Image (cartoon, rainbow, N blue to C red; front, side, top):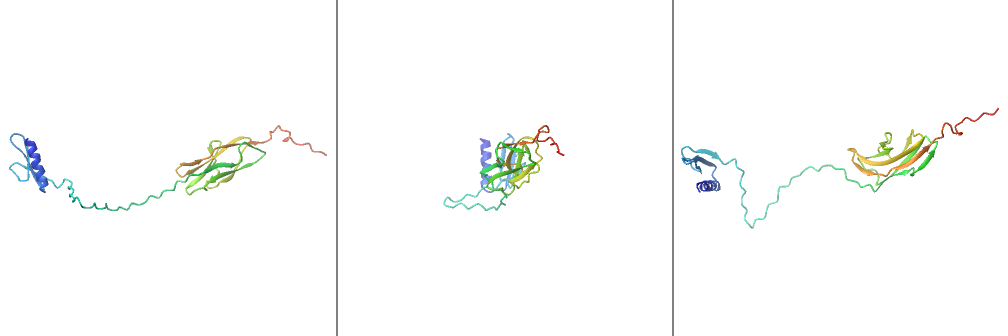
Length: 187
């Protein structure tokens, strides 16, 4: 009961707007708080406590919060590519005795700022493909089958479009082929 009285007294001191509170312990070990000093009391300041909200009348309209102007981060608009595919060569095309293969990409909408074309040849990005081009010639292709696909990525490597890969075949005559044998020269 004494503690309850001490806390009530402390609460009244706060409500009255007191800025100083005196605390002491009596001979029975009970802690007392008061706004008036007593011998042996220790002074406590209430100014460290957070300010109490001021009650508003019930009919008062709430004030608008202060407007804070934050800088708008510059974001690249997200683009949904509707088409991203290898348009040339067609799937399973066979090329005979060629030095290069022209590859074209069908991209809709067109390549957006900050994005780049990455052509993947046999699972590895084609090193010589220009990042902003949708057509280019692949060179140095020897006899065999090749898989080529396309994806659109940004500088961070995020993918925006992955086209289905196609396969094409390069055929070169064998060294043993009759077409490669030297023809006899007539005199």
